[in-house]
Length: 175
Length: 335
View (tube, rainbow over the protein chains, first blue to last red):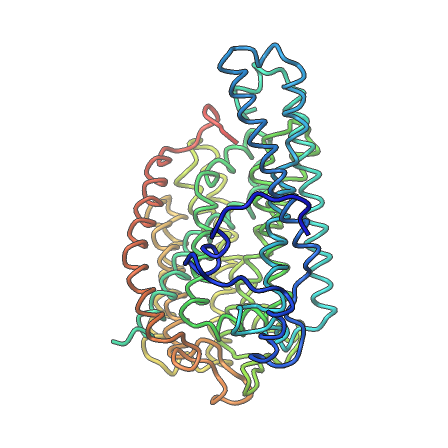
């Protein structure tokens, strides 16, 4: 699927098996083996979603590292404060860690499907028996709204602080 | 003594510490809109708990974590049975934490008033819900042979458990007032807190006695001598606390209100032992420290981890209280 790649010999095998000569299997073969071991069913997670989430997360990480290094270089040369482009760019990079974090969580949770604990318990077997779908919907919608509300409040506070006179805001929140 | 008993004791200690510590900061949050007449007064009141409230909350998280690790079946049954109640509690705690931290970040009066009420409801609702949850644990809930709750959310609200909720709410409010008498610098304000604490304390004592009576009629707790002794001692000590605060013996008042909470929690757990979740359908279906436990290997590893880490946590939390031991005045406010 990769149009280009950088090969590190044995690295993937090391990651998966902790030894350099393990065999890396394809998705279809894994699906086949899993069905033989655990019975019929799909054992393949959302491959395209994981593929792009992972690459986007890494890309964002690279952008953040580059931004950090170039800002550090400008700061070292004492030129960061006179460079409006670099300063404005940093402001626009604020959402990146949040997006990268969320993608990372998707990779962790989505990549584990259909397992709750790989090889031991499926998500379908881990569901609480006494909880109805309505109850789950209530809490899902509830938490989503709360976090949306808190996100708006946090951005509102952050913008207020950004707009303040810099010297003033150094004194902290004691007003 | 086997490790199952040790972990039951450890979880008792964690819940006891949680109710003792978080009890007063819920109480301070509940009293905030009524005792703080101006913004500066409210900031003084918030400052008394600001450096410690999140540390206190960690006791609840640790208690939940210890339950998960040591008695996973009890954890699963408890969190599934109380699903919507816990959701409400989490909403309240999220808003409370955000309001405590965000309040001082904006000077608009509407913002601060909104935060004050979020702190109030964010403290009052969990205090009430903890009372409901604990009395449900004592009374037993309909659990079937598969350790699964067969009731609904509203089955958790019975006259006994509602009285339990009200009792926790009032006792924590009084405990918060007793804490404030030790933490505020202004003498006039302490006098006002004292007057307020007498009213709340009387209501709390009344509610406490009714709750103990209902515990006697609705549960088997008083069949066990240690539990009965601890609960009666808690009632006596609570009345002593009321009298002490009233007589301006504030240190003694706070120590006694703390002891009342400690004795009550310890009494409840002593009465439950060796059960963790009581089934009201069939005593044989109750979850206890053996049928709900992890393997002895897991318990062994966790015991070593707990022995190494718990002292560290106790030391740094104690240190926080020591650093912020000075009474709070209007001159040095961070929040």
